Length: 123
Image (tube, rainbow, N blue to C red; front, side, top):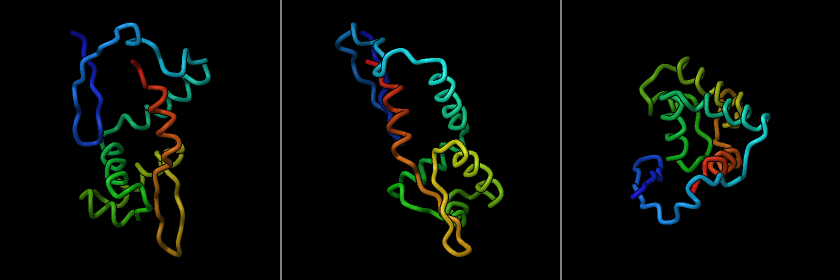
C-alpha cells in the first residue's frame, strides 16, 4: 500500500493512496523553466526553521497583521532576528509589510500560498 502525508501546521495524517494512476500527476502540469526557478526561490526562503515558525505564528493568529514586537515576545527571539527573517519573507512576496506610525505590521499573503499549494498537489 502506498501512502502520502497531508500536513497542516500542527499535525500530519497518513492517508492511503487509492488511485495510483494519479500519484505522479502534478496538479498544474509540467513547470516551465521560469516557473520552476520562481517556485524553487520561494521554497528556499521557506526552508528555514525560524521562518516556518514565524509563518505558523502568523497563521495561528488568522493571518492578520502582527507587529515585530508581538512576534518577538511570542517567539522568544531577538528583534533583529525576527526582523531579518520577516524581511526575507517579505522580499520574496510571502508577507505583506505595512507601517502604522512607528509600528511595522506583517501579514501573510494567502494567494501566494494557495499557488504553492497547487504546485505541490500531487495525487
